[in-house]
Image 1 (cartoon, helix red, strand yellow):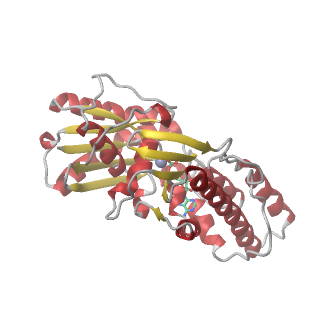
Image 2: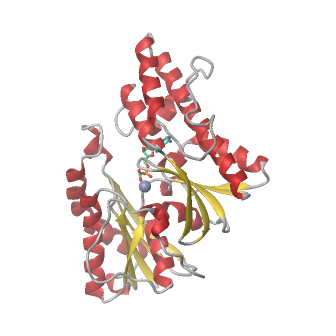
Image 3: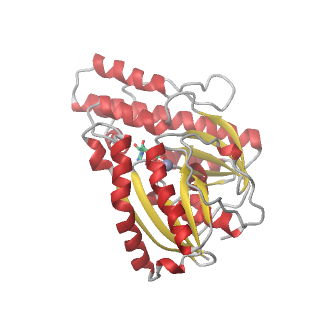
Length: 342
Ligand code: KG4
Ligand code: ZN
C-alpha cells in the first residue's frame, strides 16, 4: 500500500509518500520560518493561508520525485492534532478530500505519535518497549512506549516547552525567531563556568518539567551583564547546560523507574548537539542505547505522518468521511495497533 502523509500542524508544510514494506519513496517540505520571523513567532492565520498555498505544489513535487500518480495512493494520513486548529484543518481538508476522490481510506494521525515513531524510519530502529523524550516547540513529554498506540505519559512540562524556552531565551538575547538553533550555536562559544542556572524541579521526585523560570533567570542575568557578545554566549551556554542537564536527569529517572534501557528522542530540540551527546552517554552508561530520527526528521515533516498513518491503515483503521481536527489531543487517548508493521 502506498500512503500519502500530510503535515500542517504548525509552521512547516510536509508531504511524503511511504510504501508499506518498501519504505519512504519521497518527501517534500516547506518551512514558513521566514514568513513568521518578522513577527517574532508563529502567526496562526498566516500559517493556515500559507499551508493552503504550498500543499498542492509540494504534493506534485513528491509524486514526481517518487515516480507515482495520485491514483496509485492506497491510503491518506494527515495530522489531525494537536496543533494550530486553522493550520490542521488545511491538511485535514485536503487529505480527507483526496481520499474521498480516490476512493481510499484516510486516517487522522496524532502529531506527537508521528514524532515518537520517527526513529523507526531509520536503518537501525529501536525495538519496543522504550522511553521516549518528546521535546519540541509545543511539547515536552516523557512517554513509556510499549508498542504502537500503547503510550503512558510519565511526565510533561507544567509551563513552557523546552523548545519554547529556547526560543524565548534566544529572543531576549536579540536572536531572530526561532532562536533555538542560533542559541545553540552561541552556546558553543560560551564559558560554562561564568554563570550557573538552576535545574528546575530536579530536587523533588517526579518526571514533570518546568522551564519558564529559566527564561526569567536568563533575562535577569542578561540585564545585570555588560551586554557584551561574550556575555550573550556565556548566558546561552549556561541556559543550554541547564536545559540539557534537567532533561538528562529526568530521562535517567524515567529509565530507572520503568527498568527500560532504550531511549528515543524526538522533536525539534532533539536536533540539539549537546543534548544528543549527553543522552547518548547516559543511555550507554546504563548498558542501553539512544535512538534519534535523522536531524531533518526531528523537526516537523510529512514522512513521520505517512509512516505513523501507514501503521494504522495497515491495521485496518480509518476515519469516517468527515473533516475533523483537534487543537488538543492527549496522546494516551490513542488506541493500540496490534501487530502492525510497515
Ligand atoms: O518539532 P518542531 O519542529 O516543532 C514543533 O512541533 O514544535 O520543534 C521546533 C522547536 C523550536 O522551538 C526550535 O527552536 C527547536 O525545536 N530547535 C532547537 C534546535 N533545533 C530546533 N532547540 C535547540 N537546539 C537546536 N539545535
Ligand atoms: Zn512537531
